[in-house]
Image 1: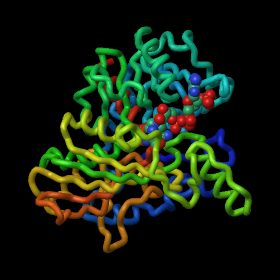
Image 2 (image 1 turned 180 degrees about the vertical axis):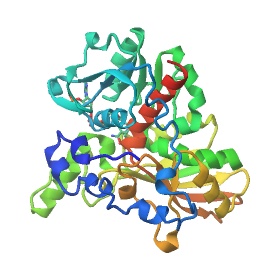
Image 3 (image 1 turned 120 degrees about the vertical axis):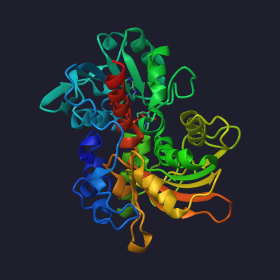
Length: 404
Ligand code: NAP
Ligand code: 2RA
C-alpha cells in the first residue's frame, strides 16, 4: 500500500504543508484516519475476508526488479502531481536508469529526493527532452501541447496527465484496470493520455458493473478536493481557513469564491450548454474509456473544502438488475477496488480514508428503487494518487511489461 506524506507533496507551499488541516498525511499516513483497516481488515464489510492490503491493484509492481531499466523524465516535477509521480516511481521500484526532473524557471535548482539521490530540477525547454525512454507530463495542457509531441518525435513515449490529448482519437486514454488493451495504440502518436482524476475513480467502479449487467445510463455528482487544483488550490483553502479563524478579511484566488466552509458547483469554466468543462471531461472520457460512445451520462462537479480525495455519488442504470449482494460481490472482486460497505457498522469510505491509498474505495451500495435496474454507489479515491500519479505509473508499468 502506498503512503504519502503530504508535507512533502506540497513542500513548496509551506503553510499548507505544515498546516494541520492540509496535512492529510497526519491522518492517512500514520494510519490514524478513519482507518479502512479497522473496518475492512476485520472483515465486517460485505467483502468479508478481503483484507485491506490485499485488494487487487492492477499492475502492482509488475516491473519491479526488471533487468532492463529506463530513462524517465517528469515534466512538472515540482507540482502536487509531479512530486507524487516521483514518490510513486520510487515506491513501486520502477526500473529507472536516469530520472530527469523538469519544471519552469520558477523551480530550476530546487532539489527533490529520489531514494538516496538528490536530484536538481532542470528547465523544461526544447533541449531537455532528448535521450529519454519515457516522460510523464503533468505541467498543464499548454505545456503538453507544446512539448509532448516534441518529446515523442525524439523517440520518447509520453504519458500525459493533462487534458491536452484525451479526446484525440489516435491517443489512447487508459485506466489499466479498465482498458489496458487500448495501450497498444500508443504507437500512433507516441502519446498516452491519463484521464481526469474524477473520471478515473468512476470508471474503475463502473467497469465490473458494466461487464456483468451492461450500463444504460449514469448520473454522477462529485465532491472534489482542492488539491485537484494543484498547489494553489491547497494554499488557498489553507490560507482562507487561517484568515477566518483569525478574523482577517479573506482573499479569493483560484476558486473565484470563498472555498473555506463552502461548496462551489463549478470546476473549470462553463461551456455553452451550461455544463462545466470538468463535467464535460467526465462525460466524454468515460464514454471513450468504456468504449460506449453513446452512453447517456450527466455530471455535476462540485469543489468542496477538503484537502485530498475526491468523492462521488454515482447513480447507475443497468440493462439488467443486480441485487445489492451481487453488486457488492462484483465490486469486491474487481481490480483496484476496496469495498468498504457496512453502513450499520458505520463503515463507508471518506476522503480521509482514501488519502494516500492506491485503491478506489466504494461503499453505500444500494439498489435504486426508482428504475427497473439501478444502483447507487459512493466512490472515493485519492485524486493525486490513483487520480493522477499512480495511474500514470501503472500505465508506464504496462508499457514496460508489454511493449518497451
Ligand atoms: P501544480 O501543483 O500547480 O503543479 C504544476 C507543475 O507544472 C509545477 O511543477 C510547475 O512548475 C509546472 N509548470 C507550470 N508551468 C510550466 C511551464 N511553463 N514549464 C514547465 N513547467 C511548468 O498542478 P498539479 O495539480 O500538479 O497539476 C498538474 C497537471 O495535472 C494539470 O494539468 C492538472 O489538470 C493535472 N491533474 C491534476 C490532478 C490533481 O489532483 N491535482 C489530477 C489529475 C490531473 P513550477 O514549480 O516551476 O511552477
Ligand atoms: C480538479 N479534476 O479536481 C481536476 C484536476 N484535473 O480540479
